[in-house]
Amino acid sequence: MLKTIAMLVFWLVQVSALLVLVVPFSAGYIGLWAVSHFLRAIGLTLAFHRYFAHRAFQMNRAARFFWTFVGTAAMQKGPLWWAGHHVNHHRFADREGDPHSPMVSGVYYAHIGWFLNDAKHNVIEASNPVIRDFSKAPEIVWLDRFFFVPPIMLAAAMYLAGGMPWLVWGFCLPTVTLAHATFAINTVNHLFGSRRFETIDESRNNIITALFAAGEGWHNNHHRYQRAARNGFYWWEFDPTWYTIRLMQGLGLAWDVQPVPARIYAEARASRARRVRRTAPSVLEPGPIGLELAEDAE
Image (cartoon, rainbow, N blue to C red; front, side, top):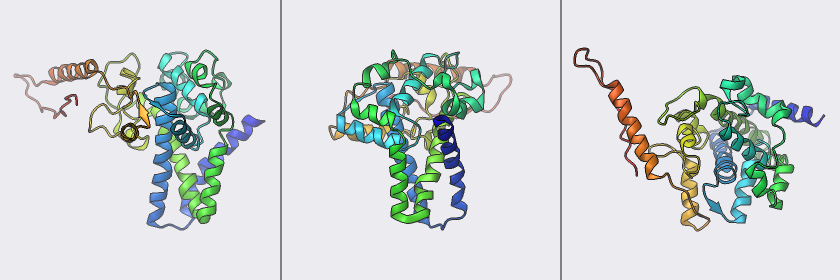
């Protein structure tokens, strides 16, 4: 019964995004959408992903609760559930056991199906490191159990602040765009994009998903070195979550921030050199020379 209700609520929110076609419009509503989408996107990737799943940095308890609350308001279930599944994704990436691989289970299942209605991935095993290490923090366990509270609070706040237009532009539409930006990392980023590193899975870098998922689209980078606090390994790879972590570090709110090791940058340069050699034009059969971005380590 609860599962059916959860599925119904999910699809109602998906459909509610269409209300942007009928509610009043002003340019300011685009800004409202952007703040709601990207702030919660950073909450998801900063807290759920880079902190809980990968221990890419440390932060104090107050900062952890703030960003976890913001991430939970994205309406993508609880932080321990989310991060625990992500650990399993890396453990079995694009192999049997991966909860959301388009290679294993198809695009629809990897994008939405696993999230909605598969009992196989409904409970995280007690041995999962996320459960093992964070299930003793009462405020995090509370958010994981009552994950529906932050989205309801956000929706109510939007309605009270500006009626239906604010509810639609500040909650309904950005919740849907953020959901699919996150889900696209599981599907699009294992099907389309570039591969800087030869990983054992099909992870790919994709600038479009990086833009909408707050830096998560540099997925091949991430699969090559999961511990780094940044997914965009180079300055030109847009990663607002990394910029937020750096700001927190400067303010003393984050520490033990894990860098990308020099050996990974060296591997990237070697990989680029191999690609250049493979695409070098023949003297006998001249062809166009592709332009490559310099990949010098910062």
